[in-house]
Image (cartoon, rainbow, N blue to C red):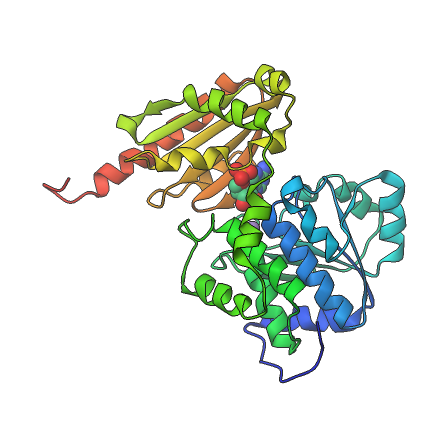
Length: 349
Ligand code: AMP
Ligand code: MN
Ligand code: MN
């Protein structure tokens, strides 16, 4: 990426503060949430390339490993995985931390307790509605952005830097994964304009889609098949419930992160308003993933129980059995669906 060129004015005071933050420090550490996705990883790599072009030194450290689908991004910039000694070393060597794609301090996982011991200036760049105050000195939190990558793209453009193909590719991965390849309700004209602009930097969208979507193991597909064949319908077919048990994870040799995209599959069932996945990769810990196909808002269901997310995609980790988790979540979904019926005009269908 090359520095220079005309600078656009920052789109907000917070973005202005972020540019000040970047100018103030030389050695940056970047991170994202546990079980990182295409948006977290793509945003990290694009941000790293940008900061490097500005002459900064940059390291990227995450709680959890890069899934196979995204390892091609690490060719553009290395992404390191938490080890206690490495974390101490990187926190010692950094002047400032940038947290991408989460504004919830706990979601940076094993880095959180290390951060407790290394007080340092923090900037948060995120698009989640939950914890929208942020925990940084600077918080660029824009829930209207389709992806954190969209905010990073805006910041880079404001700085006057010209994107390289590698940076454009990283940003494209961020945008394409968080919008479900431009299908979900967070897809808007900004997202499509950004995608069109990124294509101008010489990336190959077909190749990127193939790289991201050709990494499932046969075991994962069998596991999906098992879980999907047991799907349950509630609320007159408007709510789909999926369950994955610890025995199923074990039988197929899979981990929690392997459920990625599973909860999105029942969206294709006609008439579905919401999908809930109760995933128990470790006995006694139930990861709840919630999706709305656009009419009901599910993030508050998750945030009331300590999780969070977006209006139409949210999650929370609950202790206890899957039955306990269901009894806390399904009545909430029932209420939201019932409210849809009340909103319906007289005589409407
Ligand atoms: P998932 O169901 O894990 O794909 O997550 C859907 C959305 O909710 C993502 O944007 C996550 O960042 C968010 N999310 C999931 N789990 C949590 C959690 N425990 N706390 C806060 N946000 C979460
Ligand atoms: Mn994410
Ligand atoms: Mn995101």
